[in-house]
Amino acid sequence: MSEWERSSLVRVVPPARPRKLAKVPFVELADGRLQGVVSSGSDIGRVYVSSVDAGTYAFACSTNNNRPCGGARGMFCNHILAMITEAVLQYGAERVGRYLRVEADEPTGQAIANAMSGTRPSQGDSSAAAMVFSQFLRHLAYLELAPTTAPLPELHWFPPTRAVV
Amino acid sequence: MRADLLADPVDGLDDALAAVDASDRVLVAGLLRPAAADLTELAAAVAGTPLATRVAEAAEKAAAGAAGEDHIVALAAARTALLGSVHDALMTQVVGATGRSTAEETAPVTSATELNLLAAARSWLCEVARAGWRGIDHDVVGGAAQVVSAMLPDPGLRRLAALLDGFAAELAASCPGATMDRVPARRWGDLWARAMLLTMPGAAGLPATGTVTGRLLPLGVDLHEHATAAQAQVHAVLEQADGAPRLVRASVSVPKPDTVVGAGIWQLLRTHLSLLTAVSEGRSMELAGMPVTADGDLIWAEEHARPGEPADAFATARVVLPTATASATAPLDRHPARIAVPVFLDGYTTTTDGDAVTFTVAGHDLAVDTDRIPSAGPLTPAAVAASAACIGLVRWDAGTFRVQPLAVETTVKKKAVTVHAGAWAGGTTDKVGVKAEKAATDAAAVLRERAGRLLRK
Image 1 (cartoon, rainbow over the protein chains, first blue to last red):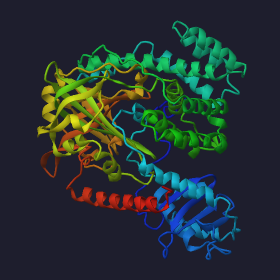
Image 2: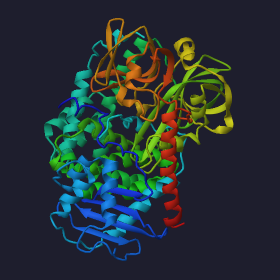
Image 3: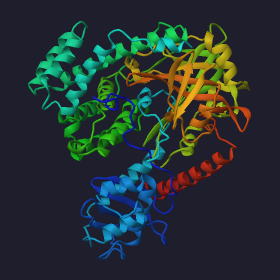
Image 4: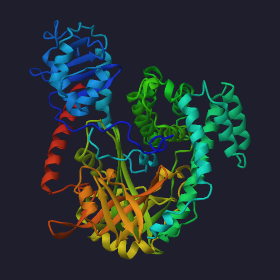
């Protein structure tokens, strides 16, 4: 076993990088998809749930009330493009490209989006939207959990890191 | 500190760690296809202990692919006991190097809590152990989410919940296990075995066993974080009204959304621990009747604390720290990764190689763990490399002692200054810090607005 394999404290998941959340409050690389939630520009109570599958790049976009997004007909809508841009800010282009299995010309959100669009991906169904939205709500619920001043010795295994992804 | 004593070989260390390696290999392959030789090696390593019979039986059942939950718990216990012995041997060395005495009292174990949730967590942990790190997929790993969500609201289950949440996120990011380039075998073995033992009713209890009164002199702040949790631990010396100075810690932790990072973490934590503000202001605090555990953790409650006089951490480190006594480590916390012993170093020379910094103390090299310095703070690897004195934590990982800097006396633009890793914990007027605070405030405001509008109340 190598020293890395014998270390208790290697960093497996790099921390998210800071980004502005106003337009895209939530993105994640999970369940074989890049998925996220994009706030509507016109209606403060409405959000769009967007996703792109890894490998096939099949995409979907609908509102939280399950109405299809008008822009996502045959091509990536602006919500999906915004989600890709913000995912690259949060995780870095390399990690996003690797997860989606995209060979992009350069490590930017634009290049990743273009490379996927170029394959003329099909429109997927929006069956995942409910799950993505509930993931977002689960994520928000973390804000409401109470802090504790009892020690959590287990968190010694999770040091911060200065390494940039 | 006698850095030379940290370099001495430890009798039996390699043998104990070889048996831990064997248990790690079992978990990489999974309990559905274990190597019998590795199980035998693990069982043999604890043959002279009270665990012997149960572990031998568990190893036999596991080798036949027939391990039940109790057997898997026994294997986790054997691994934990081995690392406990490694911890004790390393701490003997650290105590020799620092010359600090340690109190004998250890904590009692508390009563049971939510048995159903603990059983659900144990069942998930058994499932991932059967699959092995090489066999994990999204279906197996996804089973943790429900357990974690149910546990998080209960502060009494927070230790296990925060651990499982961070562990499951790492597993999920590495799925499918079959295609991983390499497996963090020691790390995941640690996290798994620890979680397993925390599912035993009462194991996670760290009851306050008394109260303390006196002047609290902060040394520095140690930050911990994974995507969805963060903890700040303030290391400090307590000058007690009656008795010798004592090393203590004060902690605050909180679950968080993964997009709250950097200065945003300090913002979440600081409102619940006024001590962080005192650290940023360079103040002591006066404690009266503050609850404390046997292993030196203050269970902070604001009504037992008030701001005190200004106090310089380096004066504390030079004058009071050498006379302070430490507390014995709680039995379950005896693990090398949990070693974090405050020390004061000076009279060293530094060498750098990229971001890697080494202190040479009286001819002996001591690696500096600059990667642990939080990015939301003024302390940088460069400041550490230019330093002449350092308050740090002695840590051990992968065969090596390292010192994690908490604060340094250094030279910036030809001026002698003191720089603390946790200087921004309580807020800052530093230009870069203010900018980071503003961005974090905006991000948190968006999330709270979205939560207020979309979460069902």
